[in-house]
Image (tube, rainbow, N blue to C red; front, side, top):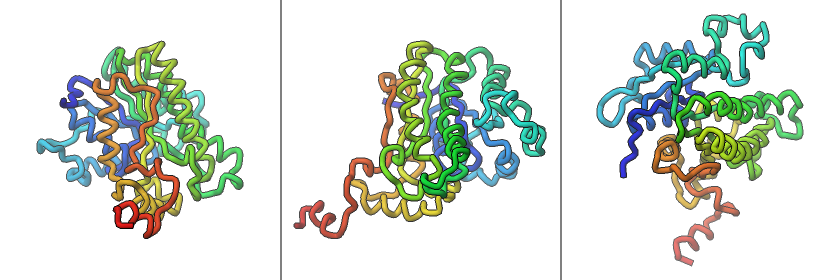
Length: 305
């Protein structure tokens, strides 16, 4: 069976470079034949568009057939805001935002309708997360920092489903990215981000039920293992975490963005038509392990003890 997304249009929200899960998912969807739009945080858009224009991403944009990944549109999106009425004047009038038009979630939905018509999108990928106090332990996190993490990282997904599900044909797919810190303690993943991921997973189940019944769409989330992206570097411990996962996972490999992208493409496809409300682990099996391994454990696993 071949995954064929020809005739489908995907929106990947949260792409600002060619490193990380969002870009890899966009590329994977294009490999399967989908038309791809991306949405980027306005303060990062100038750099992203410059890199595209100057060909700095050309190598990473190459597809397996020799063609180049081309984005139909690159939209501005600050998913903290549902509409322009929510945007403070100091943000709306700042240099990095003022020339971008309506950069809110409802503004993005309207732009896509204006560009592509009544049913402008079939697949929406939420690759967004931000916790301004992520480097702080939860015990030291302020109310403002905690709520900011939930707003940007979990409620933004609720808002996107609210606004995009009515624009999809039946069978549309929503997907977000979560992390094991939602259910296990990962030291140095703080600032309320663990709570935001737990909310995201709970919301996935409720949105799958409600949006499935109301609009006939599917909603899933991928619990991805750690990857040393620029965004993950803010924790100050990402390389250590990646190394620990590699040493202790059933599949002793470093997770690559393409691993997550392949699962995302499958979940967006008709082959996954009966999968909704699910948290799908893509972490080389680490989530199944309850104890870190030492040399004796490794020898035992190999059958040498």
